[in-house]
Image (tube, rainbow, N blue to C red; front, side, top):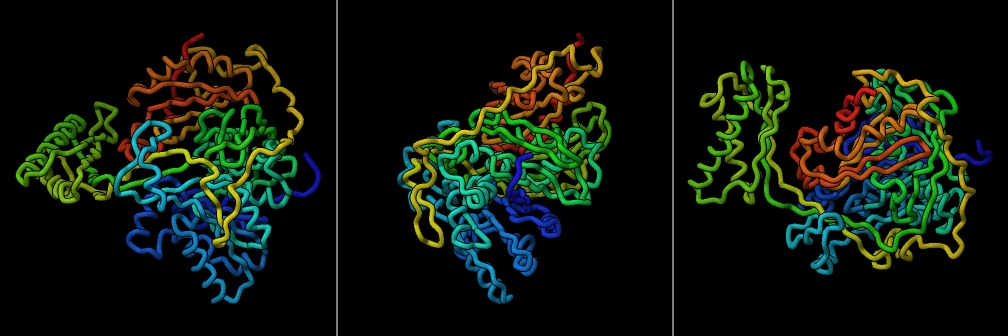
Length: 578
């Protein structure tokens, strides 16, 4: 282990409505910083819609009401510094509200606001812009948010000015951890390997308990879900970190939990691109060094990209969703027939009002994979340009209770909401200027004239299959017997990380998980392409299924639009007998 200064950073929130328990747990554990990550692309669209309705809103209420507001006195007493992208599309509004609360409490806490990411004033500049993945045109109306992803150097600058709490708009998630490390260790734009190491630390803890035993393949080994520990990264000046959790908390920190999180929502591990550096995670090593203590090291960095990723969201019509239980013999068959009848019944109502047909209908059966099942729930979805159309469907689908299949129960979970469109695109770095409390900074990190590199890590040990005991070589062997798996999504791509439990298992896994086998096993995902990336540092592969999530998270009406179940489905795949 390296000697010297250690900076402890806790992950206090992983998403928009995360648990209220993590922040007090971290305050009791004793950390230097707590980061709170709230923003996914869909959250930006929701916050943008809120701000259009009320210019004083547009930020996450949980920051003040749940996560930080109730603990300001403890934060001041313990001198823990807070970093959060809770500002959403109105970081100045949240910073002002926070300063007022601090003044009311008579506390000595300094707040800084980092913004400059908002591109709403430049929409006309993007008229000819295309989506960086799909080639779709930029929306011409109804845009609710447009933001570039800022990096970590503005956060570090704010900390250097003495900020105790830094509120940002859209920054890349891992920048909330990299910013304090730049500040504490004095890293510069040319310290590429160190910036990659700090990005790795942030990536590992930004999703909260997913690195401390949450969603872990070997879930039976994880005790204490009710009090699962929030993650803590103990970060060193050499770019390495130790992942752990508060003493006495539930959960598990192991090679498997950390390796799974390393691959979560990544594509090419040799080119994990953030504003400050392009990270190469292929040689990262993960080592269990004690109970609930795992060291991650050897990230490598390439010069920062010339462009910044940006994201725009827009309102694109209306959607109604209803969940309709159907019970009894032939439940799935009845539910399918009933769904088509309800969609057609809705069309009859539309024609009667001289309105256009549905632009999209979908029925997803929950519990219908077993033909003998006598209990299913039909998830019924319609989309239309006009709100009135989906409102009429929501009302009309209740007719099934008395007019259609026997065993139909009362629908539940009825939802009517705008459809959200989303596109990703690139903007030149020099066109985006971060600001701290309204004062503009230069465009951000750029390649140093003499990038500083760490010594190359020793190559991972090569172990042949004969050196490792396979659990079995006969029928019934599954991917999960040989590997940990975790899946996620970005845009229309689903990724599945597959980490061999022993280095010698990897050749067997690679031989089995070919593109053709993956397409056959996951045929219900439709037409997609497969790219498989190697991570020799942790004897793993990362599988990218491009096009497997048409329209992305916000458009998909699958039971699992976040694609978190795909890794589990692959884990259950039987391997051929050898």
